[in-house]
Length: 145
Image (cartoon, rainbow, N blue to C red):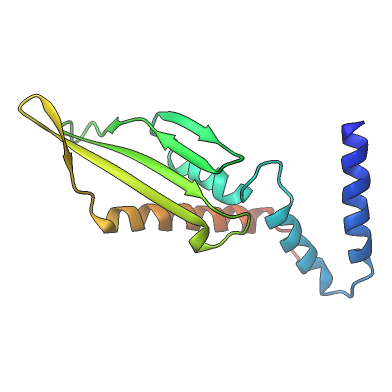
């Protein structure tokens, strides 16, 4: 019943678009790509974030709220430093301002983990990587002309 209802609703939304001219194919694909998701946020940003952070252990993922929280990650090449990330996806549209990355960093001093500053460039670079990956995913999903 749920599937039938979803199909009817989706059909009633797409049918009026079928009357649009030849340029409407691209517009329909863009609308479908950014708005039709089974999660509460942009699916490309969500997938790109998970792909980008796949090397880190995840503590929490909330696809409806758009939040991904990692556990502390220690780079094997730098065992005296660890990072923890929180990524928030704030919108259903694929836009740069729909993504926010917050990072925490600690360094090992005298056997204790001590908070240390995170360079702004690190957070910006992570956001850029996620956005680039999301755009690549979107391009790959778009029908070719």
